[in-house]
Image (cartoon, rainbow, N blue to C red):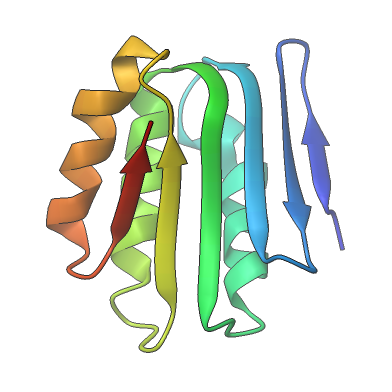
Length: 116
């Protein structure tokens, strides 16, 4: 099972003990097929049905529209998995996060968004 995905400008890894997926760097991959390994990692993280799952995006400097779409689809998929509290951590230092991450709250009632 892949716990870490590395690219030239980014790394995404899953910390099983804290059920946290951490994103670092800049993600500007070319469409859904290139984001598939990351989407797969996110789905693997929820397969254990954790009560809480965290996406830590504090060190993700950039996410293009394909990446935002992938995240949105993942958040929507959690509607079907009852009982998983999703927490998304963001940073005010990353201009794209405020607006884009707020949109995810509309997709999943109960999503906890913490931007600081």
